[in-house]
Image (cartoon, rainbow, N blue to C red; front, side, top):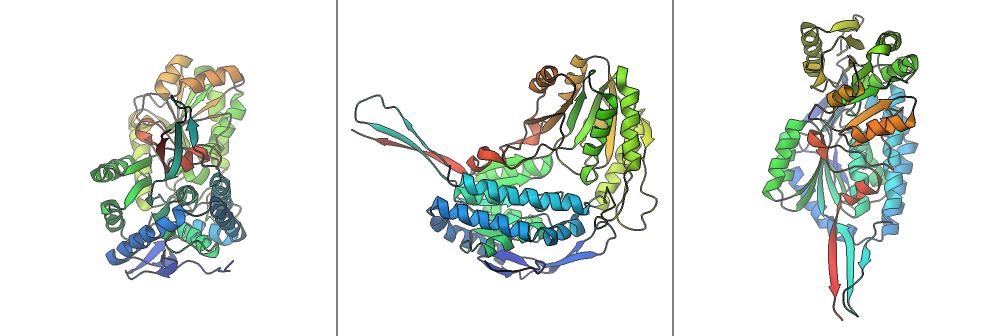
Length: 480
């Protein structure tokens, strides 16, 4: 296995590091310094990457599943061996605390580890025939060349979910990470190089997002698009993909309700909710972001929530004593300020935070913020905050809480906190979401399907379902 520890400084395609476009200076959101310099791609580079992915498809789709397994496992090992280096890149470019970055990198390695086994378990089936001597077979085949687009909040894990599953299924990939934090995906390219995947199987291109996406979407050889991003971007990608009838999987964010039941311990529930909410400064698509609490235990729950919020220490991610890093961009910071101001105008009360962090001389910092008195019709209850902002609503009865939980267009994740498993399961059944956590917020696992319903998108990543997204069924009828 090739040993490479240098920070990635270029795009990667056809088994080589290159890029003929201008140098991209990636900004550290903690202090606005330059975190990395990456050679970007030109239109010709992207076309070449697509050519090489298409050329490699026949070889890789016919590869022995055991060979795919071993190479994916080698990628997982490489990622774990370089975990600290990769995590440092993630923290420098995205801002999250280093321990959270290290957890993200381990989760990315888990994706390759899990998909390594799934590569050997892409099963077909035999259908009982209606006449003697006939055989009816169904086999799963790779969909083809994949265009993969990912967001910046989990710059290593999000592309790992796509690349690992596509490669396990026998597809080749042209991946475009977010330009705000591209190095996590480039480290995955290093893992592919170290595992000696054939040139053209894994390609990661960094540069102008419009240029790259246009070229990938316009290429008829690309048969699958997978995106983690915003709803407006998802609509545009889907419309463009429809021209050539490309298969599409979309994960478009959420606004996860937390339904607290009246038999929950309010101190425990408030503390757990706060710690779940403020992970990665709230920049998590499945972050709990609307807290629905019985009026009878509301005040005690809020007290516990606020105690945790004010105890969290803001600071640069490479300081292990810090709990919360900066927001990803100034644009996100300004949006959080706007949402808080609007919520207050609509009658909400700021229990903690509610302003930019006073100690920050540079970078994009906002204090963990807790709002109470938030009405169900307030903007913050229907707009994904994607930041350290927690609106809490006191509900009169459980039926009303479930109606509020299901009242938005989002449907990615939902959470239930309570003492009775039977009651929690009943609420879980009634939530219109793709995933539910009961007394647990850390629910994203390599072995479980991740995805949503309604405007949160469709398709799944993770688990057997995630690999299945990159296959198509072929039916074979053998006559007697």
